[in-house]
Image (cartoon, rainbow, N blue to C red; front, side):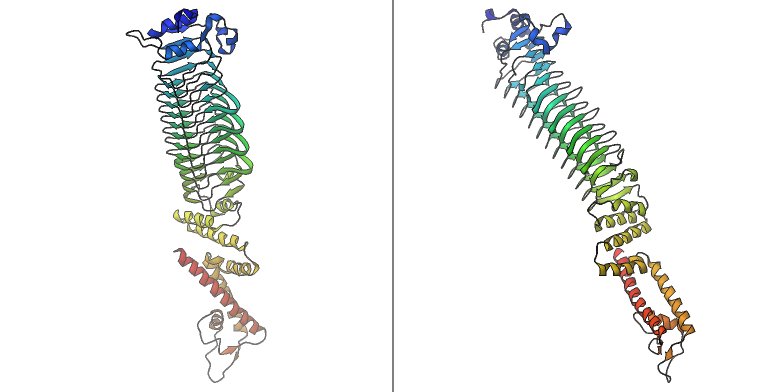
Length: 539
């Protein structure tokens, strides 16, 4: 490029480049330095993109003892800044600049790139390699920011960035690799989908105070995202559209504290198969209009839903199906609106609050070691009976085991008795009758003193009746002395012989009473045997 063809602002930049000096083309009127007003800037602020390309491609040698760099402020850059496949060894630092066309850095190798508070009609950096930081703080990018397959050795700073591509990809960063932190905070906004599937972040991913808007689809699509440290989606984070973290991995903790997610009639937060090495916080004002799913997730520490608002009345508001977690704190700010699915989850400690139990639950296959608070059995049974699938045996068995672990055997027996009663409601008429008799007589074996009471009552009744009306003697020549107590006992016992029943024979109504005692003894014997068998099997 011939230096004589350069305009005055381009010449200033050309001459400053070898020493890495800054060139400021800003106006003395601060109001006119807004890049959105660049159409009103004069020629004194115009710089052709080809001049920047020439400098970055090595048209001018660095001055000895200095680090060459393109440092430009307040310019309107016209033409195409095309560095595709270029190998740029000097920094590029643009501040408060406006581009007429989207810069192209695809598959370029850059030293470091700073485009702060700039206006860009898009930025294409697919496959680019940045050996320093990519700093876009405060910039406004319309038409999409493409970082798919890029590798940034330092920090990716998008603090305060506005991405505008409604209905399309606001940020396309599939398979992006950032060795340090990623900042999407301090007023970061995106109108369009933010895509990070398969991306890898070596430090922290920070979406604090970010506002994402893509109500017709995914506001944040980050399946298989891998973050070595913490992920922050808190501090006023809002998303209109789905948050998808399916199969993501977080090496620290994941915070949605106070976040507001909205995807009505859909999944507001899909964290299925997520792996988090410490804790997950969807708490302290966390609000989701739409479903929240941690199905198949693994949380090494605590999953906290304390003070959350979960609203999906037409479907599943919270899915913890197949979740594995050390602790789940399920104490939302209000009753969950919709189904809470805890089926087949494995939780060491489950903390909940009776006042905020969902009206509808799914508990089949849920495993836990402890419940806090344990609550009396009659209250916990109300929890079990909220299961939308109706009677399932496993939740009763698991709750009874939890009570026995705490040494609350009476509560454990009450749960198992309730299990038998609830099961009876699902059976046919004949089984219901038999079950009802077992319940009345011995409480299905979980009320052993009830059987003794029935036996004592029948024995007393028979003794009184047959003391007043002695049965006839069948054999006058050889018979023992009649004893009303032992005669009644002989009738009641389904096995064994006390020598009374086969010698004495009542008549009329007393024969009927004797037969009823025999039948009652037979049924009582069967139910006692069933209860004893159940007790032994528990031991």
